[in-house]
Every structure is written in C-alpha cells, then in structure tokens.
Amino acid sequence: PGTYTEQLTISKNLTIIGSGAKSTIIEAPLVLDTNVLGFTYIVEVNNGAEVTMKGFTIKGPDGADCPDSTGVSVLDGGILNLNYVANKGCTQHAIWIGGPEQIGHATITNTFITDYQDHGVFALGPDATVTMSYNKVVGSSPDVFPVVGIFIVEAKGTITHNEVNNNICNRYLWP
Image (cartoon, rainbow, N blue to C red):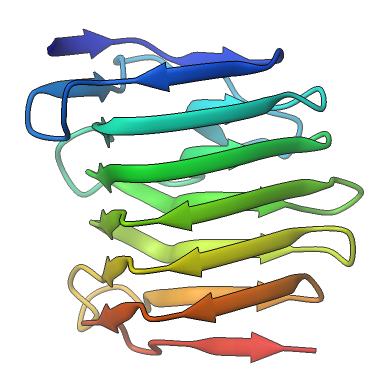
C-alpha cells in the first residue's frame, strides 16, 4: 500500500500487483515524458512486453488542464492485462491502445475508468486489439468536454458486460 508518484515505462514482461485500488496508487508526477505519439503518459507498456497489472489506482493530475495526456498507453507490440484497477484523474485518454503505425493489445476487466476528457478507452489501427468485460467507464463533464466512453477505430474489439455512462457518446465502433 502507498502512493507512488512516478511515471512507468514498462518494456519487459512484468506482473504488478497492488494491495487494492483504494490503498495502492500510482500518481502522475508534475512533469511527464512523451511517447512516440507525442502524448504524455503515466504508465506505458511497449517493446512487445506482456504486462499484468492488478489491484491499484492509476491517477492523473488534479485539475482540468490535461491536454495530450494518457493514463495508460499500450504501444510497440505491448500486451496489457488490466484487472481490478481504477484509472482516474485528469487525462485526455484514460487508456490508449495501438495507434498510427503502432500495435497494442489490451484485456481490461473489473476496472473503473473515469475523469478523462476525450476517450475512456481508445483503440486504433488494424493490428490493435481490445477485450473489455465487467468494467465501468464513466465520463466526466460531457456538457463541457465531448467525451466518448469506448472508441474503436479499425481495431478489433470484444466489448461485453460493461457499464458505460455520462459520455456524450457511450459507445462508438467505427469500421
């Protein structure tokens, strides 16, 4: 248990287990590096690493100014298994998977995603995949920000048994 103020870049196979979302927190530092997409991030999985994360909160900065920021990025062939995690705090995208010329894969279960200003979960690219089940994806201030709960563009997605609400668009699947 504890609050850990740091930015994590994970490029090797790893399992990270906290003592619960209320007692183990990875909090964004004041200054964050950017990834290959130009986004700042709190946690990034890349280099083909397979990472399992369970039992903690990933927390973005407080406030309303968080442009081009991501709570968790999965790029460069990374594989993320996220289970019993809370992802909250000011981020533009809570979870970003894949991207232009990027491959990412994520399985997200029993996770609470909130406080994002653009997308709760964004999967992009024909080689990106996302599987989501039993999550809560709750937008913040859809009257102020045009938030989208789950946005899948050209990626492959399996989305079942999730609660998605308080978004301007709660689910959008595009080719």
